[in-house]
Length: 113
Length: 112
Image 1 (cartoon, rainbow over the protein chains, first blue to last red):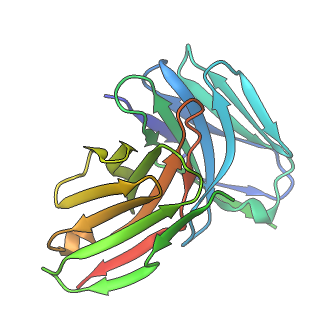
Image 2 (cartoon, rainbow over the protein chains, first blue to last red):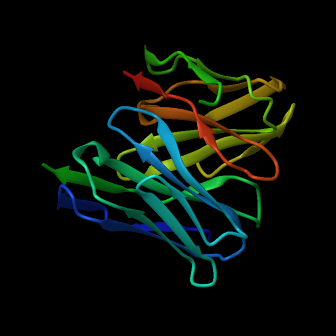
């Protein structure tokens, strides 16, 4: 079964810290991996997309890496701010079967001022 | 922002009534998806479409049906709503090749 796992489920850190969120997946045959942000009661905002052929993507203070062979991705947030508080979701599009996203359960991030 | 509109945004309905949720896109993307999001379960795929009139089931399709008669519209129907279908429903689109997904703002459905 194709599964995506995110650890930890929740994380609380003081403002200004650099932090890493983890995502693992069960099958290395993927089209891509996406990181999303979701604020309470809101929709999903795409943060970064990493294609299968890529190793990392960067957007501002965010950097996402992809290691297909080990089935892992990390989202690095530099110099965290209270506005970064949200739930971060990892989703994978596997090549086997239909082209649909499989989501992890998410990491709820709280940045304390 | 990707042009995805979900309607209605909020709905309260009674058990046993039919309900249809609409997803409309202006991006001409081939793939469209319906997910539901529930505490403790995350986002789960209900149905998806890979073209006009081409649809298939996801992991939680029981009690739901879909239709796609035009590229831009994907309808999700609850034939006879139950309390277990109280949830937030998200529509998503993607295109062949990159499969980058974009999501609508969601529909909060309450079945009483």
